[in-house]
Each structure stands twice: as structure tokens, then as C-alpha cells.
Length: 167
Ligand code: FES
Image (cartoon, rainbow, N blue to C red; front, side, top):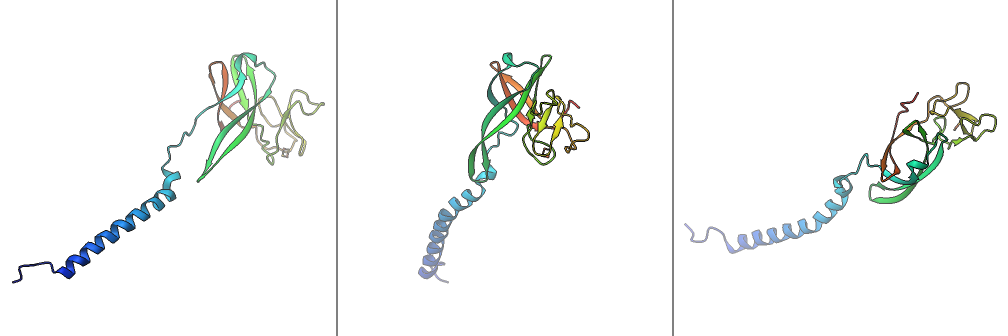
């Protein structure tokens, strides 16, 4: 029976394998981390964005409110600007998406002088009532989406879009 259960050759092989594995892990870890990092990032889903619109200045006439936020798409972060049509219905703040439900153009309040109390889509003459309900006989087949709304320090906060609950 040998006094050395591990020969010098085996010891050298084990040592080199260990060092090689350690170095390979050191090189692979950053690559794996880079590949899965966006998946591991904490998402701020459902967060509200503060706008420059004061709640106290809102009336029952819709006004366009622009707001910006950072959009993360994989590893690419970009600044996106969106807008909402915001008005008061009694004490309730309503925010409607300006995206036409026909083919996605942008609707304007009172954009058609023949229908000054409606939203108007200039692309194919689509119309919506003030609560976002699509006017029958015009191209859109559904109501404008609504935004979740909140308030912070007297300013309107816009959340995610939801199905129109007013119609
Ligand atoms: S995109 Fe608005 S009516 Fe067609």
C-alpha cells in the first residue's frame, strides 16, 4: 500500500482543474448577470407619474396633460412622453387616453367645429363623447381607454391605462 494516496501527477491535475474552474466561473458570472439582469430588476409596475397639472385648475372642460417617464425595454432605457385628456366630473378627476381605438391616431377635444363637445380623431373622422364613448356610425368600435388617476400635493398623477369604466 502506498503512503501517498494522491500522486504528484493527480495533485497537479486536481489543482489545475480547480484553478481553471474558478477562473471560468469568474469570467462567466458577469456574462450571466448581464444576460438576466433586466429580469432581476425590481419593477415599479403600477406607479403613478406626477404631472404639472394642478387639480385645483381643472374644470369640466378636458385639457391635454403631457407627462414623461422612463421606459425600460430590456437593456435600453428611454424617456417617453405621453399625454392624457383630463377633466373634472364633479369632484372626480377623469383622465382619458388620447389614442384612438380605430387605428391609433391621437384624438383632440373639440377638434371638429361641428361637434365642439366631443373628442375628434382627424385620421378617419372618428368621434367620441366626453366620457370616451365612441360615437356610433364613426370608425372607432370601442371607447377611449381611461388612465388611473391619483393626486399628490395638489397635482394630478397619472397611472396605467384601464378599460373605460365610464361607459
Ligand atoms: S384612427 Fe381614429 S378614426 Fe381612424
